[in-house]
Image 1 (spheres, rainbow, N blue to C red):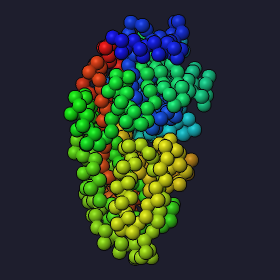
Image 2 (cartoon, helix red, strand yellow):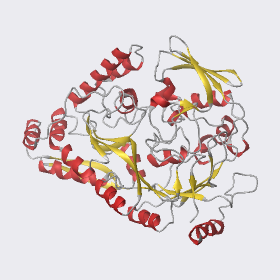
Image 3 (cartoon, one colour):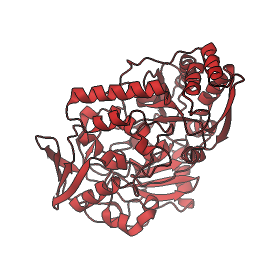
Image 4 (cartoon, rainbow, N blue to C red):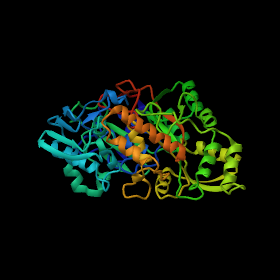
Length: 520
């Protein structure tokens, strides 16, 4: 019992108790303590949260019209959330959502109504206010039919539209009043409808969320969530083993998982895998030469990388679309590892003495060791990779300033081919463009197929267009698919998630109103 009282006293000393009348850290309920390994959080705006660490925190505060059931990342299992029910027209272009009544926003911002949904979806589709605007590019108009009914009309049929309004990325619903009041500061003062409300953020120390006791699914069993910033792997593990935190993000390495299990830890390995890709930036010479890109592809040995990653946590990629996504196709084949061929291609490109290129690399454990392996593999083919190792936030920022010839990037998206193609391989979202997202390679060869597939009503024709896009990207060597890396977390014996954890699209174990933690 004493172990749990000490953290509680510490919270009181730090002044973390909420004001009377707010969603407080109630004395009779424990606080769930989590560390994802983040050094800090950049934003809590659900329409701007793109990093793994930001998405995990944001997901506790917001809902979508529909949701993935807790513990699932299967789009076939989407269920009602803020919408009680919905209908779709015969041509799949008009979607009508009937909202729950009496759902309160956090911090006394009133009841969630149709005007909030209209505002949220329009905001999500605005590139000036959202990082996920392309997701809503096919929306023609959004209307409030009445206070509790919203109608969305699409430009073209979209059988996957329901996933776009799920509790993921742009589908999260915000308070119109709060967002208009705070403007660009909404990311520091978020207001949603989820089981936990924003409490406090102390830079590089912690984020505190408080239980939303008015949550429409019921009062949470924990008083709140304390996200502690412990970027050091060893320090985070020590905090877990000493009982200072209840849940931590583990290292996605086979050896680490095996050691954690030997120590008796509850290791959670779940989908979706974050798909790791090397994006080759053709805006930086000599990668503008296809022979140089082909040489890099021949120099990289994916099988060797996968041996390091391990069978429990990694799966080899054969296409730039992750395995398991609708539309995934590997008919174009894989790049053959051949060092002699790599050197020959470099010579043909006029670089018989090799080349030197620069890459901005994150210092996080999920990236740096892999890039060190890649660096050694490239060196064997006379390709010197000059790695500038920086913190993760700096890596993100500088990669989006076109400062890196090779960008190592991992992501999990809504599981169909369009989600990946539209974010990483359409020239409309290339770095530096007005609607930039994550096209680090400045790939453009598959634009026609990607855009045609996006509006194709025939499912089989859509699959063929996605297949064609993958073939063109493969032939032009825009990027090198490496592997899918599953999520690895560890929870203490005192934690009960309240559901079976098989998947979590926001990449962290969801903390719901049913999640509980026993005092020690």
